[in-house]
Length: 274
Image 1 (cartoon, rainbow, N blue to C red):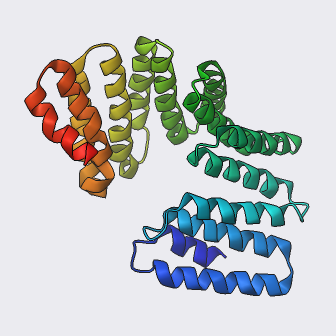
Image 2 (cartoon, rainbow, N blue to C red; image 1 turned 30 degrees about the vertical axis):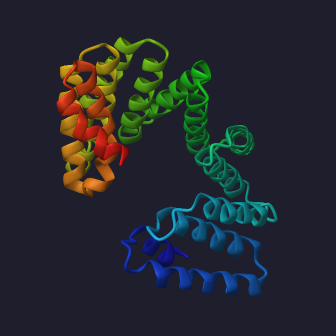
């Protein structure tokens, strides 16, 4: 399981098909053993393959295999893995915009995590719930869970996830009409990036600059927003390729539009929509 799991995470396209064959072989052997833990792990890895493979990325397939994984984890007494499986399924349902089911599964996972005092899992699920509530515009609850996540990361010196939580907090604050607070959250996140290993600093900086750009836009500071957005777009394109960063072209185009610079807006908006 460990070797195949590592191979899945390292997939780049050319190895996907063989890894999928290997996963089905592992599943078949696990089923022959009648060991629910092994079967659950096999289904979980198949779900991960569908999530990461450029040849799949199919929400229905991810959800199917994670559902099957949960059904087998429920045949064990491994509360930690059952909690994780419920939360994972909750994320799948969130991606499918089935928000009520996503919330219910995450809550089930949270209850189990609390039963065994698994603080790391509790915090992960709190972050999932914050995303769900933010997407359903329940910003008060999104804020509550995000602040709990931040408190945990601060207390345990987890700088990298703290930076991402602060970026998420800024978005919630903007949605609640508190763009100045959102700006402060992103500024703090940018300061913390200096504490990360050098290999992570660039990509995290690009990500946080996007969120700061969104707060500047909410404040009507379009020039500052454009500077952040273009910087982040170019940086992410240099690391991951243009296709992975092109989603931000819509933000850049909309900022030019808000400035009244329609000629500059057109190519960005055209590329974003087509």
